[in-house]
Image (cartoon, rainbow, N blue to C red):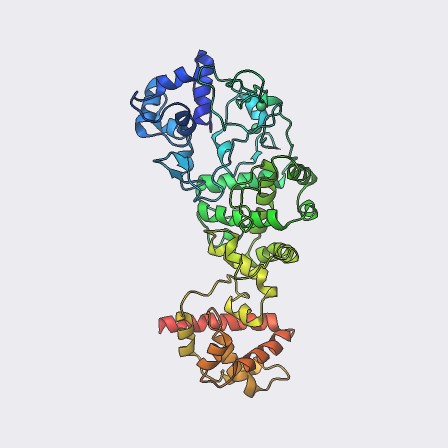
Length: 478
Ligand SMILES: [Zn+2]
Ligand SMILES: [Zn+2]
């Protein structure tokens, strides 16, 4: 009885029990390393699929004749660091990793039918929402009882039923251990036609996880490890799910998925946002496959843009929706989108926020550059710039930036002060002071106001940010 490719450990063991007509508890007793093992019964079988100790893997290998490495790869430990993190002592998936684990196993009824009830390990991941073989959304619940799967282990005295619902039967029918026994292969699926973006999104996720690397779209210039990319995708997906209206979703996704999402939003299990604190939408993986599919597919359509600027433009509607919903979406709140995001997502966020920023902040976050960034802590950048800048900006440069009604005499110190903001945390007053008080904060603000109202502001911003970057780097070399 060989394991199938990608099969979960408990599925394979249940299949052996089914083939040999062995009660589940007898099966586990035969595989357990020693009688003195403290972890027994239900907790053992529930946790084996998370992580096997070497002696346990060796024992199962000895009992079944299958290589211990193959057996270990059937546990969630195979995704350690790429799709989740495991607390080996407690044998559980930690919350540290973005969307590590769904609270239940989703399933593809067609896969179950094709394999007479063998379960894929990846259905346990919070990132699994579609079957790319059968081109459908995964199913969350039993077609008979409507409960989620694999929260309850098999009944010890019974022979496992492979493609049957193992959750407790509704109250009052049968004894305490009676199971629903619904036929999971008959569950209705949401089919996803052709090269559906949700299927492409699912494949992209699986590729990121298996390669531990993201190099698509915005990551092409600076590839990141799986963990960083998944944190980014979660951050964007969670805001999509929190801010988007049904019309926003319908505009951006094919009808089949938008409709499936509309249905789960109004179902008893909800859209899957409820377990999260109000200020942290999407921190935990969505309960429903359709919800994960909507969030991830739209997030990947944004992060799949060819560069930061295009991704920023694609993200901007979410900033608009958040603001329309009365949420402060700005450079201060952007980090709250999610922990552990990459500098690439930060750059995309800053680009998206740029039109809402004051001119001084556009300089500060270098929004016109290829990779906008948060200014670093401390004032080392400001120190470097201060050493390179005259208090009166160079005349030839100043001429190009002098717009009416400002005179060159007003513009020159204002430009020196404005330059001091590029990539630094200095406020206008401190920047003006650094010019030897050749200008006041109000003077800088006024000059920037006229400069930013000029039709050439976008180009001016690029030039000033690049000059700021150049001067800072030259200071390092000096
Ligand atoms: Zn399938
Ligand atoms: Zn059921």
